[in-house]
Structures are given as C-alpha cells and as structure tokens.
Length: 166
Image 1 (cartoon, helix red, strand yellow):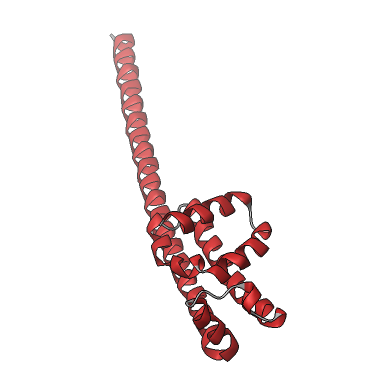
Image 2 (cartoon, rainbow, N blue to C red):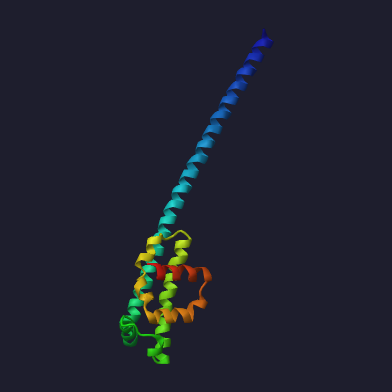
C-alpha cells in the first residue's frame, strides 16, 4: 500500500510538473508573439518616419532650386527664356555653364526621387510633382545630353521614358 501511494504521488507530481512546464511554454510563446507584434509595429512606424523625412527632403530640394533662381538674376532670366525655346547655342559659354550647374541640381533631385522610389520610400506619384515640362524644353534637353553620362544607365533610361512619354 505504501509503495502504491508513493507511485501515485510520483505520477501526480510528474503530471503537475508537466502541467507547470506547459504553462511556462505557453507564457514563453505568448511573450515571443507579443515581442514580434511590437517589433512589427516599430518597423511600421520607422518606415513611416523615413517616408516623411524623405518627402521633406525632396521638398527642401525644390525650395533650394527656387531659391537659386530667386537669388540669381541671370539664372532667373535664362530660366524664363527656356519657355521661349532657347538652346545651348543661344547662350554664351559662361551662361550655359552657369545654367548647366543649375539644371544638374534639378536632374540630381529627380535622380534622388527615383532612388527613393526604387527603395520603396516614395510612391510613383512623386514623379507627378517634379515639373517634367521644364525638362522637356530644348535647353534642358541639350544640358541632359551633355550631362547624362554622369548618371546611372538605369536612371537615364527611366528618366528619358518619363520625360518623353507624359
């Protein structure tokens, strides 16, 4: 009888240990799931913050272009003449180089938007706000032809398709 009571106590003790182990495992599993949900939430918030910062940086770049034009009478004059269709041959070498630098800042801005789009931080509609008509003007096409070799071929193809097909 004593042996059988010990056996019963041992079996009951083992069952309690298994039950306690299962409870600990369930708590551990719930902790892991909770941690994963928290990490997912944090990643989502971080991605949103990066997107917001990226959009702000793009806006800042546009502001800098406007500021350059507002502060430099010669750039402003040449920019106004692009509407009339002037070309590289219509400018002095100095004026062309001056405007070439200004335009390249614009092309780099578009390239930045492209890279942010490619990395998933901006949507395709970001390209609807780049002022693509500006880049279709003859002088800007001349500048692009002179400077596009400084850009990645993938971007060159993308940009030319964007410029020519909208």
